[in-house]
Length: 454
Image (tube, rainbow, N blue to C red; front, side, top):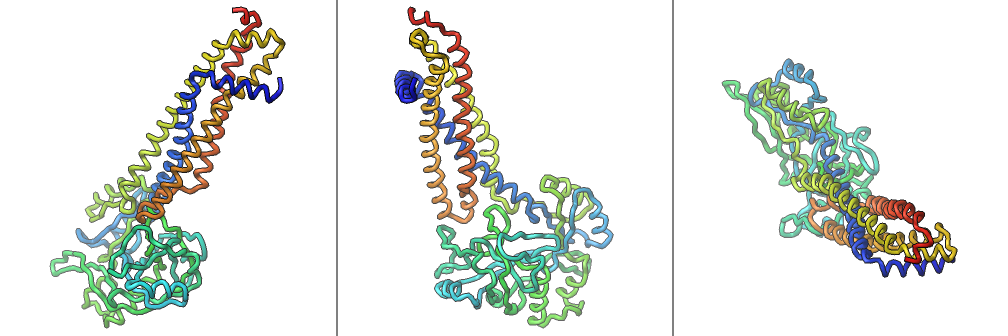
């Protein structure tokens, strides 16, 4: 039997297949579910996993407000299981906003000249905090007064002084590597949070606004600006040594003698027991255990391990990761059952015709090839339709999220991830007909030429 005849006969079978439309609808839904739901699940689960691995998501803020954090307490705390680091927060806790005064990049300068407000948030890294870069050099080996900028950078506010988070025209941070920016604290001030002890040795937190020095930062690298992780499109990171140098310069400009312990700020700076610390667990899942152990020592510790993840990210990660997988498996099972039932029903219904073909001299392999083409025509048609729908859905949602708020960008699907799941859908589209054909083959072999007489 020639290929053309096989194809013609298969298409004729499809028209006579009563379950053809049902099969196409169910398998279309299956392919849409595999590509779209799986892609969203991967994006949201990866975002949540990335956040859990971040330094600050594993850290708890430890203050001396209940009792001073002496060397003995810190040493005893360091021996608690699952505590990986205890980092001093001096000059590091909190983020200050700085105005951009100048830059040696003309394109960048022309950008911020057109905006009334141009500022960045500068954060110093803790002792054991690492910030990997996607381009350029990390802060580990960079000299002092170096910085890394986000991969999508937008340090501007609109002329009304408000930040609108929708449809921002981001700057590619990698293009700024090697450039220098000159910054100064907003309103010529930077805020320093510190702890003081009263006459009864009761410790409390307070803050002071110091005169800000003007300084230059050399952009040495670009970090991935994750919407579910620390940082944002206006957040610049500097090393621990750099933030210390900036703070000390602010002391000098504010005429604060760091060696004069009669001054509350100087006393706090020189007294480790008045410092606050970051207690870092070895794993996000061990945060609760660490919290209980440290609290049991009578220390004041804040429990905010999810401070960097939005509730919607956690909810969608669980939704797509668990319910989505159940939905896909359920549709897959239903599709296989429907196709097997259809294959069995159609084979039984065509017994007389198949018997006639055998009586005319057609071999089992020729008849089987015809039935196989029928199955593959149905499933591949569904595959094409399903993936056209999936592509349209992903393209539309990506466009909406890319031009939506900053937080929504976490749900933008990487096309490489989408195409991987499309390939998986293609494998499944081949697997389902094969399962059906195995069932059909056994029935086909049992049909005899005499069936043509029934």
